[in-house]
Image (cartoon, rainbow, N blue to C red; front, side, top):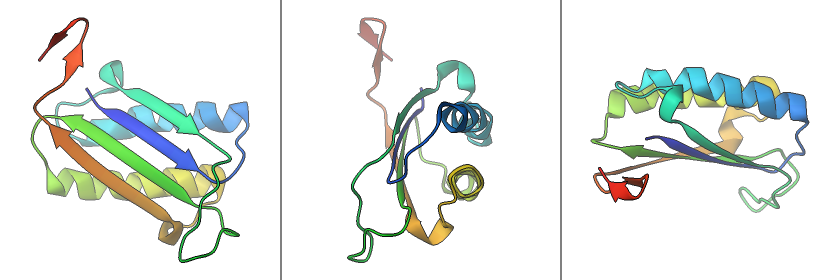
Length: 114
């Protein structure tokens, strides 16, 4: 049950959003037991964001919420892939991207909890 919550400071086109969605669907498989079949994504663009007190550079914040136990080595691989995706598709430099991971054992779906 992964959820990727993406906020970027740049305007995105429908083509860019589609490419990001597709690439995130592939990238989530870097986490053991996770797949696109359970992935939910929120792509918020044109967010007013400041990094190091400056709002002039393209910036992204990506929250990855995972049901289950943390896996730091897999998170390292996913962070590398996420920064690659946002760099290639939106031109956001990896040093202007934060990725936050949150894991939980409490996750609800379809009227009940896992």
